[in-house]
Amino acid sequence: MISGMEQQLRALASRVRAARSVTVMTGAGVSAASGVPTFRGPEGLWRTFRPEDLATPEAFARDPALVWEWYSWRRTRVASCRPNAAHEVLARWSQDASRQVLVVTQNVDDLHLRAGTRDLIRLHGSLWETKCFNGCVAGVRAWRDEDVAAPDRLPRCPHCGGLARPAVVWFGESLDTTDVERATRAARCDVFLTVGTSAIVYPAAGFARIAQARGAFTAEINLESTPASSLVDLSILGAAEDVLPAIDRLLLSN
Ligand code: APR
Image 1 (cartoon, rainbow, N blue to C red):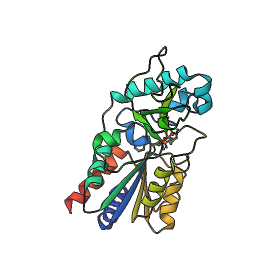
Image 2 (image 1 turned 60 degrees about the vertical axis):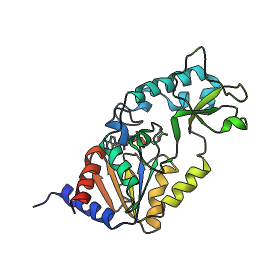
Image 3 (image 1 turned 90 degrees about the vertical axis):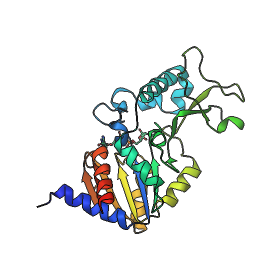
């Protein structure tokens, strides 16, 4: 007698096997096993820190040193983390020419990149990139920056000399139109997976419904149910770092 979970894994594996195109939307839960704090989980960042104090343009204008201190803390924390099995499976799928697998992430930790994910679509920017706070013409394009900012020497825009800010999407800000267009195109697929996200932050939380409306088979992998659980065709309650390798093994075994 096979377990309910085993049945679900086999059902999803057979959908992925038959698919020409698979899109995977990921959130903080995918990096939890690597030691990166989630936002709304038990030790989530937003339990300790107030987003309105740290993740809005107004907060940065009010106290850039405080915001940079927080992002430097996050850079230091993530620098000590490594991609986990969930990142590795998705990276391998994205490199596999037998089907198109696109990863769309809300995460800013770049662990998908470090795992080798191809054509990653980053909706919320990167912890490891910086851009001009004034939005000067040259400084609007983000540049790589792995430094930890010193409170007395905050990063500056090399073009206009103004303050530089972390190139992440803050609350109240729009996402980059190119990223949204790429994610919207990616929502035209055979299978749409949403993994490790609380599915409450838009527009990211809206892509599962777009994909479903276009005929995709939709599935969720999460430790707990979310607002997406009742929408998707299959909701698997489990850890991303366990469930994705299990599906991968089923794919490789047949
Ligand atoms: N495997 C699968 N799911 C997990 C795991 C795990 N190992 N650990 C935690 N989760 C789930 C939690 O149950 C929760 O539903 O991951 C989800 C994490 O949710 P959030 O902390 O809200 O993170 P996320 O959905 O990525 O947040 C979206 O909000 O704060 C903003 O811009 C920030 O990108 C972020 C966005």
